[in-house]
Length: 327
Image (cartoon, rainbow, N blue to C red; front, side, top):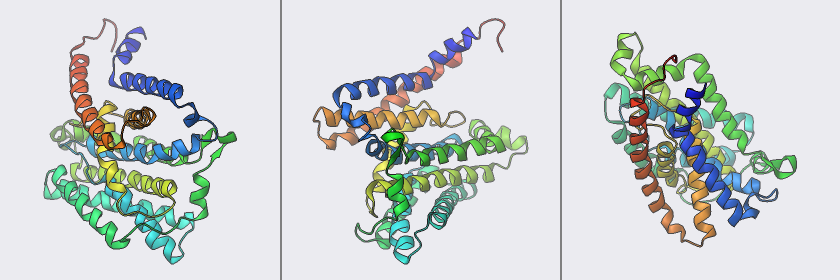
């Protein structure tokens, strides 16, 4: 047990958990009102789209072949404008209708990316960059300018329970976690990890690599659709230009959370904590009156630092011998 605790204490997940805790402590000292019962729901509403974008990036990265999905941000934005500019505008505002349609839309967009990567055998960065541009333009076709409104259940999600200490928008995070838990229970997550770790060995074992990669991208698209709903909750309208800003933040959060960008390993918890850390860095910059124009610079620097640090840490962990008597 002690050896396991020692290995965990030096793992990337432990590092990002410590960083998130430290950033939270600093933010509480500098801006205590941000986490008060009256403001906690608004704070969570700002965090949830970024966290879901990071979680949506995990399955494609895990599937290997450099599966960085650049289209995650535009999927958030496209789902947002379809939700507000098409479904709600035509009277389809029930959550029992909107949510399944948005999830199916996100899954279909992700599956299309995955099919091109798996069967046409193009590089994931090239495919998803094309999707980034197509979806970014399509969002403006659907809704040329910001506008519209969200139904009442979205406004309800923007609030909180327990006297303001349990933001209801966190239910979307729980939905994404439940989707990933179901994938683990059904063995899909294990197949994604096997393909990302060594696709030739997986093929030899009888795994249908192409279908697994399509499933990975479809799952990412489905979680990104939840992010699109969270974005709608946040801005209470449709905006064709707002989704793309989440792409770099999502990639940085995955790397910061300790998931190797080469695939084959990782978790959902690390990228969630990475997204929380990036959000806390942003609030810290605001508290110290640093211009918001610097946030993209910070994301880029965090991405470079996280990739370098995790590569070094992973090499050290791989080289560390197991103590006698452990397995």
